[in-house]
Image (tube, rainbow, N blue to C red; front, side, top):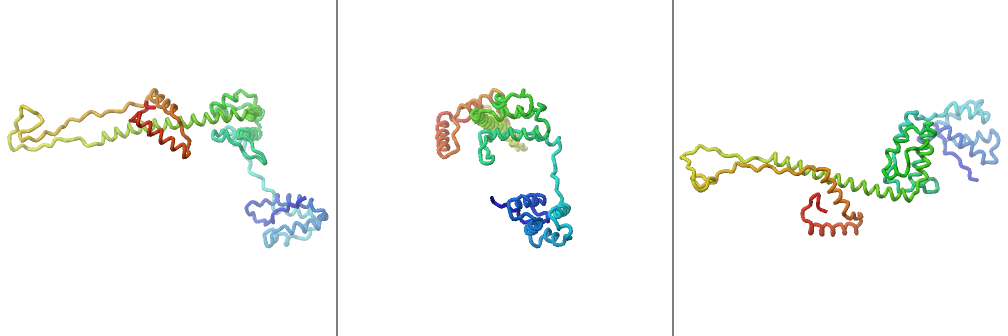
Length: 312
């Protein structure tokens, strides 16, 4: 059996050093040595595991003989000098807030997580984490606020797991026992729908921005003005063409065409755009996919010409 000795103890609060863990590890190691049985042998082993010249080493050398005469008295003196550090525990409200805030990551739903020496589906580890929080909050046998977590599920997952569960334990069991194949298929479809919806919204935003920029351009363009000069000779109206003066110069055209406005993005137009996006083949982000995408673009332009929200 391997003798797992703890790292050398410094006693100065260096990173990762826990005095009580040091004592626990040292006692565990002593049990594996058949020749470490007497108090004297245990005290010597303790001293050998103190880093030379460290604060702990100086403390041991200066410790009165009466406090290191036996192994129990030495342990008492050690615990007095380096008492156990109680961890900062979360309040019940903090645990509940963390529990209610648990969300399933759609992008991880088709993945596996390494737990020890085996791989486990992400939704299984998620359910285990939620149940752990419910136990910490002393709510595992309660159904309080299950709906808050259930409401955050992707739509397909809401159909697979009912919100009407007896308690958090039953709820987590229902998630844990989901068929992985159905989860993967549902997650893939939900992810594609999400990406398409994001593309549609991005296009709608681009159209809206184009409308705004067009209006700004019209409002900021200078208006042609009529140049007024004092005539040096009488002006006569020509009978043929009213746009010319007596000298034959063209009169400035002070008329301005009314601006043309783009139609607003209505729900019908947005739905038409969404249907167009859905009707197209979505190529993968690979060299072959990008080549196929470029060929599709060239073909589309040759057939459809100008892009609108109603063109496929």
